[in-house]
Image 1 (cartoon, rainbow, N blue to C red):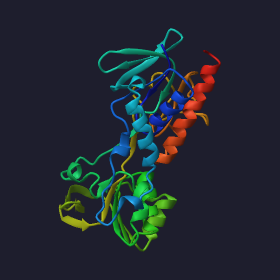
Image 2: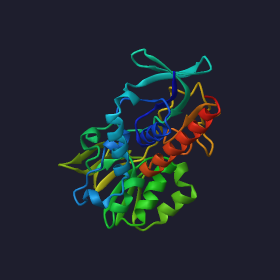
Image 3: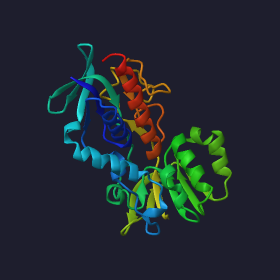
Length: 301
């Protein structure tokens, strides 16, 4: 039986694993890859890597260390977690059952996609799913934001502070009646494109335009320097939502020390109610979860 099993190899999981190793815990990281969403970077024709604060130096250092310490990782997705014999068991997709006295769930979240032609081809080539990460690069540029909820409104509002033009593709009239929605409607550099069907994404090496169809069947092409799909984030919490409490969006509920309602189970990163879509915040949450797990194990080992 391991002292600690960490599920998820993104920034939060990698950080938690390294902290646990340095606390001399018998730890195992279960993941399908190392790095998570940090393996994907938005490419823009006018941007060099040094202009983006990514936190990748920290993530890459931890990833390299885990690649070297092969005894501390198992490269396979987890299918479910459950209680077992005073501890917990993580069952992988191959059927392996791995036991531990404590768990950290750091499985992250996935973006809701548009599902239209051109989206897959241009993902991270002028089209991405996190305006919060890349908005500062759009000074005097044109951006398109797609989404019907608060996440899209916040993204459009941040872009509007520096971009020359922002198009917000939003079909939810109720969302636009919020305080932020009204502010966007009044902004001189924001155009609301309501009740439009997304046809496809157009471009060359990079995404260059979004084609939309109105309710009369007319198709219009909107050119932009970048396209942000901000429809929602879906937490990867299915493996644990019957073990720990989740909120209405299936995010794992944690306290300020990354503890769930189940003693011995901790969570960190975008799978939790404390998500932020920022690498450096996920790194901090992973460290905090590892220290909380260590404190818990000191009392039980």
